[in-house]
Image 1 (cartoon, rainbow, N blue to C red):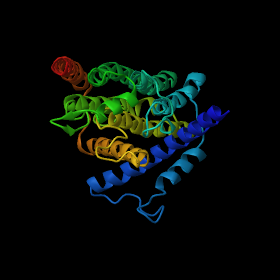
Image 2 (image 1 turned 180 degrees about the vertical axis):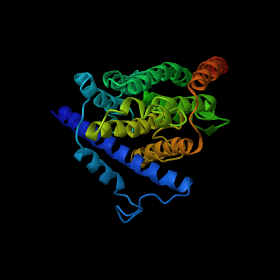
Image 3 (image 1 turned 135 degrees about the horizontal axis):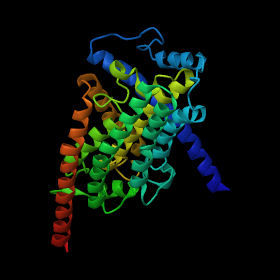
Image 4 (image 1 turned 90 degrees about the horizontal axis):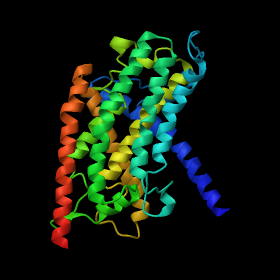
Length: 338
C-alpha cells in the first residue's frame, strides 16, 4: 500500500510540475526577450513586471470557441495537441531531482534512451496536426517538422552516445553518479568539460527538435502562417503552447543531467546534498533554458536547405568524431588504471 501511495504522490507532483514549469518559462521568455530587445512588454497584469499576463492569456484561450475545420480528420485533429504535451510528462518521469529514491519518479536502466525516444513524440503530434487540418500550409509545416526530426534526432542521440560510453551506463542516476566520481587532475568536473563538443551539439539539436528559432521552419509565421497550428483555436492551441515550453524545460533538464551533473554539486556535504540537489538541477536547467531564449532573441530563421546541410554535413560528422575520441580516451584510461 505504501508503494502505491508513493507512486500516486510522485505522479501528482509530475502532473503539477509540468504546467508550472511551462508557465514559468513562458513568463521568463516574455521578460528576457523584452529586456534583450529593449521593449517593455505587458506590465499591468500583476504588480511585478506583469507576472499575471500569461494567466490572463491562458484564460483567454480557454474562453475562445473551439473550431474544427469541416474537412479535418476530427479524431487525429483532437489527439495531436494532447500527444505533443504528453511527451514532456514522459520525459520527466525518468529525470532524477536529487540523491535518494524519494527524488526519482522512475529510475530506468535505459533512462537516457527512453527520454530521447519519448521526446520525439511531440514532433509526431505536430505532424499529425499538419496532416489532419486539411490545410496545405499546415501539411507543409508538418512535413517540415518530420524532416527536421529525422535530421536532428541523429546528432542528438549521437551526442548522448558519447556520454553513455564515458559513464558506462544509460541510467540517468548512474550518469550523475559517474560525474560525481569523475575528475581531471584531481579536480571534480561535470561531463560538459570533456564532452563540450557533444554538449553544444545536444543543445543545438534540442532547439531544432523544439522547432524554435532559428530552426522554426515548421511554424514559419511569415511563410506558413504558423504551419501545423494554423487551424487550431482555443484550448487546443494552448496545449501546443504549453507543449513547447514543457518540452523546452524537459530537454534542458536532460542536458543539465547528463552534462552539468544534474543534482550533483562538488563539495556539498552529504548531510545537506538531498536538500541542495533539486535546487541545483532546477538552476542548471534554468541556465540552459535561458540560453535557448537568448538564441531565439539573437538569430534569424534558417532556410530549409541550410537546416538540412547543417545537420548532415556538420553536426553528424562532428558527433561521430566525438564518439571515436571518447571511445579511445575511455580505453586508454582503463588500460592505464588497469
